[in-house]
Length: 200
Ligand code: URA
Image 1: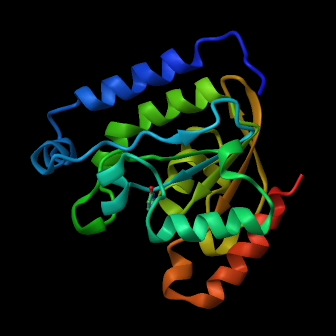
Image 2: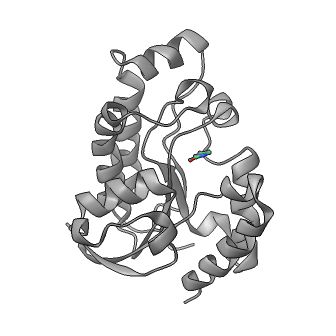
């Protein structure tokens, strides 16, 4: 393993500490009330590919790990399909605490957590940023200069875009959320095909 002499661990730990310290908003209070964890992200701090989902679910907040439940099993299968080892990528979400009953995140919740995601991206500096689902797709495209290209995920899933970040240009690829394959087996084939764009 290449050990690089920078302070990514500390910077990521600081982001985590700040999220843990959030106490005011509804989702944070739910986390405290339920005695569960925020989910910051996991994987290689030098990953070339970063996957960004929506928000943690029940299993994720019980363990503090992203995509470790049913959607995570689909994600693992999709990564295996393109022979990508999960240890070599970084996986996170926009929203770091669980919306009750897995409802969609609200705009104010996305706004609250988005700056933490922005900082994770700046620290890890991935060459390829993959949005899993429409919430992260919309946020990232608006945030990184692709507002004019934004369309429904049904139209632009699997397409490659160029995104301008504070560390240079990165590729951006919106994909369906892995959960769609749980409800519609045909969509798993679409996801598998889309994941093939990640084969370098
Ligand atoms: N769905 C997400 O978007 N993220 C997770 O971590 C789990 C399920």
